[in-house]
Image 1: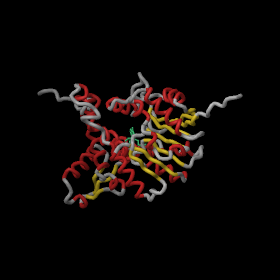
Image 2: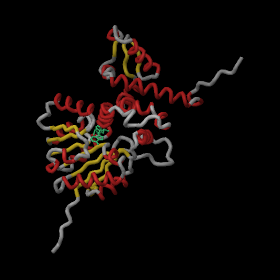
Image 3: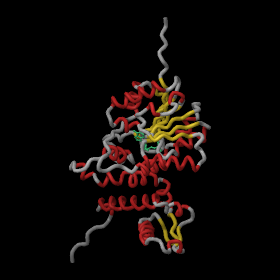
Image 4: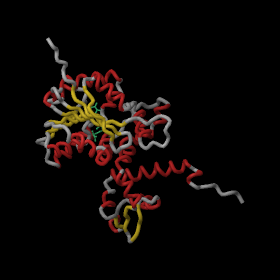
Length: 334
Ligand SMILES: C[S@@+](CC[C@H](N)C(=O)[O-])C[C@H]1O[C@@H](n2cnc3c(N)ncnc32)[C@H](O)[C@@H]1O
């Protein structure tokens, strides 16, 4: 008799990766297809699946095999493990929904038979949607605490995505908002959200490239600019491009204006087992972007016309917030 092949996970690490890939894809897909929230609200009954695509039942059964769901009394419900995964589903939506297509084409990028940006792009709706879900628990609480220390009346969000964050800030601090995003899908999702929350009179949405600073209405009256996970996109054009952008932004803002930047630091070399930041950095390399550590951001922001007042660490691994203020003009003594 032949010796049976070991199937213990510790002996076959590739099967762990196989499992992680399929599970992340299935969970993100359920969220994007709007099937996941029913699981949180008491579960999904077999009767309610009558007439639905058999793939939905197969997906739920697969999640049972992987301990995310349990099936009992003709109902699928989240296990404790499943509830913890559900709480962090934004990470999976961002990766699978936002970057699934370019991830699948890494081979073609390596062989130079396809180019990111012209042949394949990320999906803006799920980049923005996944980010907003992650940020709700992992970034927004620290942002709100930081913003509570300053005062402002008009906030400009550069790269506002689906505007969930901008709406939360305007709501919490009674401010007016301007949201700028270049992506059609993200801009459309933002418009729907602002209308659904009856905030059209307080929030103006502009579909534009944030680099066209002169197209931003009333920028000279803005006393707070927030920008989350956007400045590394400008950095993709080189450090000088970022510096030029920051200098132009500072020049257009009124004296005393604040800038709050959210970024993710790259992983620390030589430290295995770091969560999230190696993948976040790799996905950005795929789309030809690099990330900076906190000191790198401090240097470029200072050179670009902003004093960095505070650096706050967020719950998301590697997450930093830099609270800055436009440099005071140097007063000349006569
Ligand atoms: C990671 S998302 C962050 C969305 C939102 N700020 C949040 O924290 O939930 C980055 C956003 O920046 C937008 N973006 C990237 N480059 C841009 C550019 N040059 N001009 C305007 N928007 C841009 C993308 O479309 C995307 O919606």
